[in-house]
Length: 336
Image 1 (cartoon, one colour):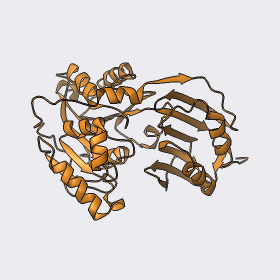
Image 2 (tube, one colour):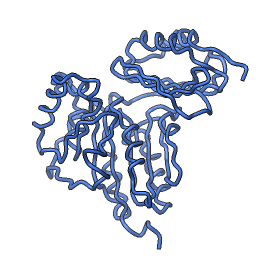
Image 3 (cartoon, one colour):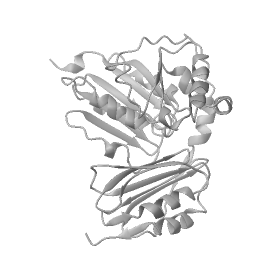
């Protein structure tokens, strides 16, 4: 009997840029029942495909949608990825939208696939640094993310003070309707607090007023442009220009990054709101993340190529050559 004969539960993992969604996906996959096969649909705003490359799936199935948000500009790719996943016998599907995404239209599309699938729960990750009273008032998208979620992971508490954590908790506890769970986590790991992934009760209010759809549209409107990279051994470059702009590079394995110079390059980038990559930094390869002025480099098993993606809160069309000139100072070329 094929597993697709039953309705497959779908868990949506949402959150702002850099909140820790991909790391949480790693933990969920590590703790899933051994006899189950899960599908993963991962969405990246840029074209280079970094998050999907970091996942090492043996028996599970992954579909990646890049080059926009699956709630709007990449919605057709989202529907096609869901159709592709449903060709496999799956016990659960995890969906990770881009950190610039809005969950409303993602949910609408899921409902169009009923009864093959059903929305089993929405997890939203947020950090104390992101969840401040000032930003709560300013960001309608953030308010919508939290209002639509069943369970909130207040993540990266190891990087926050007790005052920042308490302030964020107070905000979350004032939300109506109340959340099913508000869990304090490091690295998105909530297995000890709530073993296994349960299907949440979906106790949302019957009508939720969404405020952030216009804000989301303004943030994600972009135009892909043709741009020839001047950097050595650049295999691919993708540039999207708009209110929020993205530039992504893919380099041959011969390219090596000097860690000190690379960190200097990142710290000197004005209007940079998110950076991530898989970089060769010597004989090692490392996973790079930048958010809220914090830069991390962690060892990773990837050995195929180097990939770097930067997201700016501005139009960077007149800065591209300068960005590449500065980045080149951090590059070394190896014979092998």
